[in-house]
Structures are given as C-alpha cells and as structure tokens.
Image (tube, rainbow, N blue to C red; front, side, top):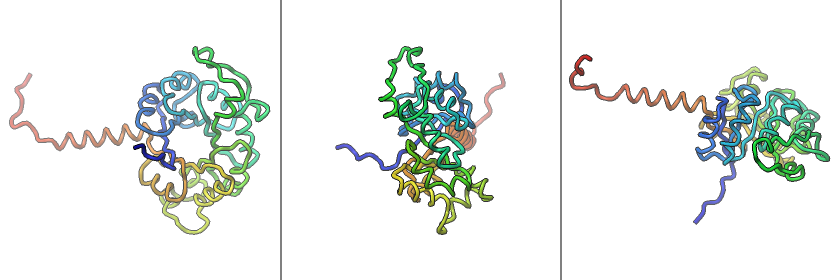
Length: 254
C-alpha cells in the first residue's frame, strides 16, 4: 500500500555553498532543494560543482537578482528552476519568467553547459516544459501588485520572503505570522495565487513558521536550512553531552 503524495511541497535550503552540504540535504527526504545564490555562498562555480551531486531531487537556485544573465547561468548549471528575489510588479514577474525560457516563450540564451559536464543536452522545447519559475514577493509594493504578479504568464510560483516583507512593512516576522486580521499580506498572496492558479510558496526556516504558513494555504514551504540545522543539532548534542554523568574518579594524568 502506497501513501498518497502530500499536498504540500517541502524544501530543504542550502546556504553553505559547498557540494557536500547540497548532497547531504538532497538526501533528507525533502521534495526539492534550493541553493541560495543571493544570501548564501553559491556562486557560479559552486553551483556547477554542487548541482550534479544533489540532483536526486529537483534543485532550484535563488539567484541574486532579477537578471536574465544570472537566471540563465543558474539554469545552464543544471538547476531545474529559479527563485527570483525582489520582484515588484507584474512586468518584472513577466521578465523573470521570460528569462527562464527559450524562444518563442521567452528570451533565454542557448548555452549547452551540460555538454561540458558530459551530460546530454536538453532540447529547448523540453527545457521550457520542465523549468520552474518562482518570483519573490517581499515588499509592500509587490503585495499591492500581487494579482498581476501571480497571473504573469510563465510564473509558476509566488514565493514570499517573510523576513524582508516584515522589514518592509515595519513589523517583525513573529508579529506578521501572529496577525490573523483580514488583509494580512500573507493571506493576500495566497488568495491571489488561488485566483491565478499559481503555487503559493514561502520561506519558513523552521517548524513553527511552516505550520503557520501551511495553515494559511501555502503549498510550497522551505523548512530545513543547513546553517540552522547544523547549529541547532550541534548545540543540542553538546548540551546533552554536558549533562552526562562525570567519571567516578578523575583519570590519571598523562
């Protein structure tokens, strides 16, 4: 008997910029892996090195900004999708989507980098069908235009960055998540995505935030971040080890 797939897609998120971190996160059971090239340590060389060893799950890249060159480079490196930060309007969302696809659907430049890795080159039609374009809503201006952003042709997902959104709104992430009043921007994004038939995604970074966001209707949520997992698990182990009983008598001096 097989279980039915979860309606929520859970993502692991890597900041560290090394192939080992990406490969380990690809094996924890997440539905996809995001390599962070905006606030993380993934540059061009790190992406090329890390993606092949992590490709047992779909690998997406958060690019530094909405640039056709950077979007194309991430996809050339083997990413299955991109997350484009600080998208402010429907027009900017369209630009990100077009940068993710080859003509006639977009303006992505042909760069068969896969051949240099000894991998088969994917033809443009197949690449266009397979690519995933997520655009980030992180400001009040973006929330105000979220209907156009969510409905932009070629945009598969609207991805909320709660930390930047809270900063832009003059509040904290905790208060933004706790607010259940009508008109909360988090709920505005979900409603716009449902009307447009677009996935609503968000960065949670932990279980409590993930529970809150999933409860609001987000169906793609980043939960496990390598830097946080290492720090939290390591601190727990050290704390537990300090509570172990001491030896009955001191060991002899060396």
